Image (cartoon, rainbow, N blue to C red):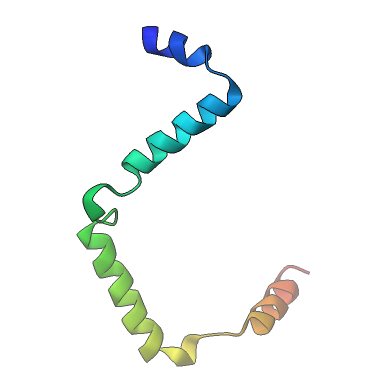
Length: 72
């Protein structure tokens, strides 16, 4: 708790600098992947499906029109 009391004594600029320092220290240590292996697999599968199932894709204009018609 003593640390929090000391932090409260910092001015706004000092707190921002501390926040930036903390963020930079945890952002991506040692270039570690922040995405788990299973998530990468899911993304790769979705990308594969995206390129092979293009007949299921809709344009934004078509989707907007369908949503408007559905909710009127």
